[in-house]
Image 1 (cartoon, rainbow, N blue to C red):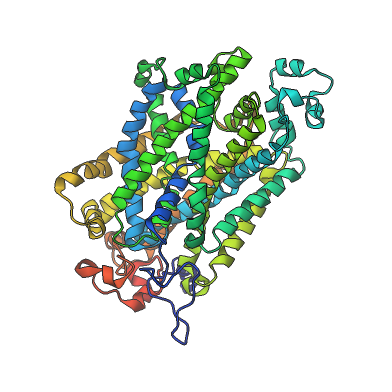
Image 2 (cartoon, rainbow, N blue to C red):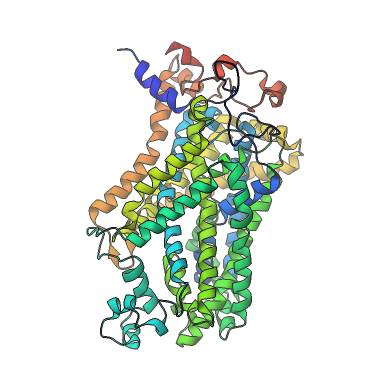
Length: 615
């Protein structure tokens, strides 16, 4: 039986846009993302350095900086948590961030085509794209929650406040109880509003319930915002991030100034990172694991977004300097956000006459229950609520832009001739499909789906992808060769400069990632939403999502080895060697190390390395 069918499938997946695709009349297809003054007139470049940095900062700084880091710091000893957090930034976060940014910029390709450097790991790129797809589905649902709460904030008093307890919405949940009775029943009014008004949550995942239409419309609006911002690719999103990447800092500053003037604010700050820091927590292994995990996920490593955004840089851009700026900004934002969050939670604890530990929360509990409840206690509460939820929306949109750009870039790299001039159509199609796939997340059981996707699509998969990435580049491709590639972009550096990066890439970072992965699997417990357990079929579905994302790694590795020629060792060696057309995208940057690319060989990138012509 001939083998052309499977080869055609893989050929479609890995077409390359190395050579400029032209029409039969010899003219280039117009691309709204490309300007005449771009260095790369095939793929386009960022309009300026500011847009790239703001996009990277917006991608890295997301909801987790606001609703997860402050709680982890409080939970793990306050200021003492900054010690493992900073160390993990140095040994795991920054090395991987620098590696991915350099990798994408060097070859000007998305997360699939970059693996021409190590074809046997081509499946890692597909895994990254699939993770970005699953995350985009539920991440926009979280933005939709924020949009709904934003519209709900345009009323006084706020619908989840005690003053508005007798409103129609909360009467549904409170019934004949008084507001005080409802609060004493073990569930605050803001929690009731979240569960029974905003989510209309069912009792379990087994009970789907109807579509919650106000959330469905909010989800539609969030996808319209994403699609509009990305309609012309980085040329349009680069303008939007001037607002979306900077506005959260303005809001955090306003909230901090207002928060520290409130009674009880210092109690919240003391619990967060004050004199009550517990240095003995440093002896707890869980503290170090949580610090490393927070750094890894906060910087959006192994999602494919860093490679995608950096692939639109000019070749000689200083990616090393950019990595330092983005990583330090990301971590500084996390710390700064904690002060704004805990100062107002301290006031909330003072009002309720409770310890801060009883009102502090993370994730959905902080963003949609605890913090809105605290804001409702302030004078002019709608103003603070509006500012807070606009901040959450902008934080989410920045990260979503990069996630959708990953998907669009992978498609356009696969079909450059067909899709080069249809960027708007590609983006619109992706947004429509993902909107439809996200509709189960806005039913009565939607929050269970969101939590399930978050647990199984953005956890172990990223750790595996990140580990294979650093091992593949340092061992299979060659760490020293990779360093020489970077020096082609940023200039030669001394051996002392590379000493730390070599230590991290060759040993420290893989060890840290391996420990986190093993520890996470060892301590795994089935996910729950609050006290609600997931059904067996839900857990099985979650593991199927994980398997679906990871299975492409062994499948494509096996296919690469199978299509090579020679004995077993020759086949493996060929699959682990860079393709002949690997290197800088533009001929003028290839130099003596890579030479002139064979254009005929560059037109199609199939997995089978240099043995394509035999198929």
